[in-house]
Amino acid sequence: MKPLFVILAVLATALFLVSLLTGPAGLGAWRGLSALMFGGEGPAPIVMREIRLPRAMLGLLIGSGLGLTGAALQGYLRNPLAEPGLIGVSGMAALGAVIAIQTGLSLSAPLALPLVALAGAAMGVGLLVALAGPRGGSVTLILAGVAISALAGAGTALVLNLSPNPYAANEIVFWLMGSLADRSMVHVWLVLPPMLLGAALILSAGRPLDALTLGEGAAAAMGVSPPWLRWRMIAGVALIVGPATAVAGAIGFVGLVVPHVMRPWVGARPSVLLAASALGGAILLLAADVAVRLILPERDLKLGVLTAIVGAPLFLHLIWKTRSGGRV
Image (cartoon, rainbow, N blue to C red; front, side, top):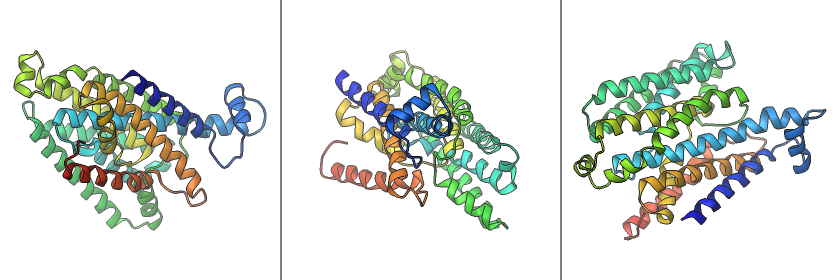
């Protein structure tokens, strides 16, 4: 098991470095790393520190966060189709960003768009808590999340439908496709604290999630409090998915597919799968972000589009394996 985690960590680190060294500026590896660490004259330090470093860090943070939350929700809900957007927080964050773009708030300050999106995510959490109730089970949580996602989707469609400005509508559509381009270190510092707190909440719940695989009754007999675990999961997922969507837009399939890919290698125990899925998510998103810069660099291929193109066939393959009697 440990060699696998070492391989995943090395691969994630290698892709982080590749992300730092990939771009249209034409900087060599030695020159780029020297400019990043020691600075110097010319545009190289600005390119490395203000453009490539934030992009690589966000790819690492958001990818690991999506993989982690996907594994956590699949383990808690005991549903292999669960994914980070299930509880509706990402949809509400996207709705907040859409409103910010449509009303022009996104032009008032550099961080206006992600802050309004975070406010939308917070409203989504409030709605989820109100709908699920203090004693609601996993089914209630799923239904509440589906209702919030539908509400957010309807709101986004309404804004697009009534938009009098075609340029704003075009910007909304492209933002919803998801991207890590044109982000700065300010965005990194904005999402880092809540995402670290959310990851700590989820990773510390590994053993209760293991107990939950035996059923809520058995988990309660082992000292696990199902209501406390539920709110820990909601808080952890919201603290990761909300900021990730606020900064990068809607990036799908990472949280859904990565736990399925990792499960045959590490087993179904949530406490082990959580860390493996976090590393796997970082690897997938960093690789996809490098690919969008290499495949069509002049056309600005969106990250969410590529993850869907790669993730959908992979998920269909996993479904086919399940139908054929294989394990997923």
